[in-house]
Length: 405
Image (cartoon, rainbow, N blue to C red):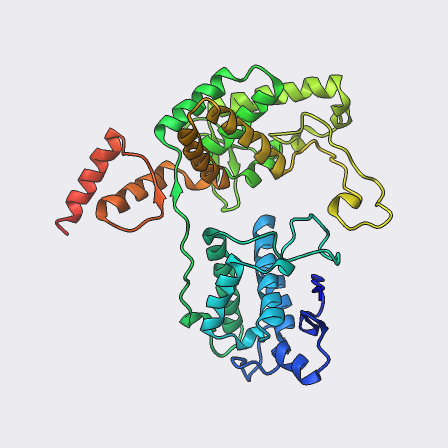
C-alpha cells in the first residue's frame, strides 16, 4: 500500500499501511517516553519528538545561516524522522547506535516507495523524501546533521544521553580528484578564445568568479551589484561577501568579464523582451543575469501535482537559478572534453564535476594542505597533481623542520 509522505503531517500517525490505530503505539513512536528522554525541563518545552524537532528547526533559523544551509538541515532531519517512525518503527529519542548504521545503509539503497524523481510540491500526495540513493559524501553530510540535532537535544535538556556518541559511521567519502594545472591551462585558454558571443561571455564571467574568487554556484547566482564591497588591499577594487562572512576579492580580469556581461545585458534589455528589466535599480542588478526571458505560469493547472503545474513567481530583476548556471557551466566543460580522447575526457569531466560541486574548496591554501598530508603519509580522499617547484620547496622546508620536532 502506498505511503502518504505529507511533509508536515503528524508523522508517527503514519506507517507503510496508513494510520496507526493503536494509541499505545502512537505514544511510543511520539517519543513521549523515549528511552533517552530527560525527566527534567527542557529548553524547547517539548513533550515529544516532533515538538523538539520543530523547536530545533526554529532555533537554527534564528542563527542567520544561509538559505541553502537551512534547507539542507531541515530536509535531513525531517527525512530522518520519517525513516525512524515509518521504517524503523522507533521514536527518535529511543534510537540506539546500531540504528544509525542502519540508516546509513538505508540512504545508500532506499526502497522504491521512498523514491521519485518527479518535481512535485512537498504537500502533494506524490511527494517522496528521496530522488534516489545517496552517495558516500551526501551520507556523511546527512549523518553530520543528525549528529548535530542529537547534540543540541542533549544540550537543551531534552535528552539525558546522546545516542550518536556510540555510533561510528561506515560511510566513506568518495575520492575527489582536483582539476590539474594542465586542466586549468586548457580552461583558461578556452575562456580567452571563446568569448565572442553573449552566452560565452556570461559563461566566462561566471567561471572566473567561481575560479578566482572561490565562490560556489549558489553564491554566484545570489550576487547583485549592491553586494560589492570596495577594498584597498591587496589592490584597490571590489570584493564580494560569502556565507562565512569572509570577503572574496574580485580580480581585474574577472571584473572585466562581469562588465562585458553587463554591457551585453544592457543591449538585450534595450533590444529584446528583456526590456521588462529596464527599471531594475542598478544596485539590484545581478552580477550574472538572464540573457533570455523564461516563461511564467500565472495560473495553476486544473489539478496541480507537479511543480510545473503551480503558479511561478515572475523574475523581477533578471536573475538566474542555480540550475541554469550549472547547465551552461557544465556545457562549457563538455565542449572542452569533446576535444579529448575517451578516457581523457571521462577523467577530465569527473574532475570538473568535483570542482563545480564546490569551487570554494579548491583553493591554493587547501591544495598545500593536501600536498602536506601526502608528504607526511596522512590519509586523504582528495588528490591533486604533482607539486609545482615553489610548492615543493615549501613542503621540503616544512617536512624537514617537522623531523626535528
